[in-house]
Amino acid sequence: MNQEFLYVILIIAFGYLLKRLHVLEEKDGQVIAKIIFKITLPALVIVTFDKVEIETSLMLIPLIVVLYGLFATFIGFLLFKNEERELKGSFLMLTSGFNVGLFAFPLVFALWGMSGLTYFSMFDVGTSFITFGVAYILGSYFSDEGLSLKPKEIIKKLVRSIPLMTYFIASILNFSDIQLPDIIISVAGTISEANIPLSLLLLGIYLNFKWEKQFFKPIVKFLMFKYGLGLVFGVIMFFTLPYDEMFRYTILIGVLLPAATSAITFAVEFKYSTDSIRLMANITNITILVSIIFLYIFANVI
Image (tube, rainbow, N blue to C red; front, top):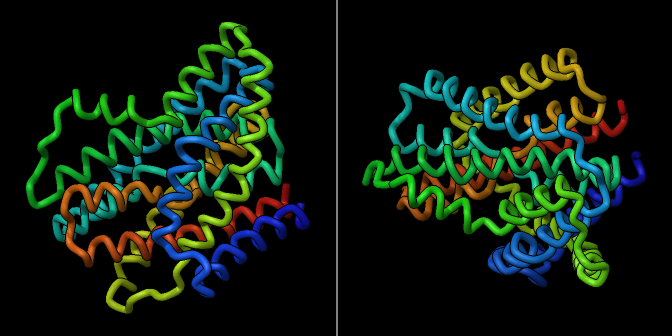
């Protein structure tokens, strides 16, 4: 496990080095991210769901993720109730979702291979609903303009998510025992091979070790809440859920994944202040580092 994990860290470090040498810039990451979310990740989902038989119990993973997202949001409301309106919105958007596709998939594949991706793909389904539903609503509600969303707009947001729709269609095909033509699976398999290296390079490109001092206290408060609640919930689920070990590891590791970077996109859309957006960017970077440490511990324990 240590060797595979080392390869992952080296590719992330290589992405960061490319940025530092100005071979690539953060704006290039936007293009890479689009390629991942719209092409390589959907291809990986198609291949994964085609090869693995999904047990009925796995359908509980998205449900657990959604329930946890709602629970974390409720606790967040209580914890951050005295914060300024926009800061509260920033924290709650970051609390609701997880960075699964970019962060978890490459590491999970290194640790557990294709079978591990199946479990975390189901985790990502739940995350997508929380991210594009709960986090999006919260971001709009706490913006200066206030809540201006309609259920129709939320549904459109979900339907336009290519990864989510790919999960949905691939799940239906899997449960219906319908297999796509071999040529489609072969092409998707070739494309999907680029997903892991591109995702790891993108993580390196977006890494930033310049954190501003005025953000120190709110960042520490958020990190203690996110990882404290996640660790307690994850450990309880790990020792109480009556399912196989991989199912329980998925929940335990999943709730300790980095904050979803999509929250920053929402903040820009809802015209949050530059300070709030910079704070959210700092938090997402730090959660990547913290989650890498957790994954390294699991890699040596498992």
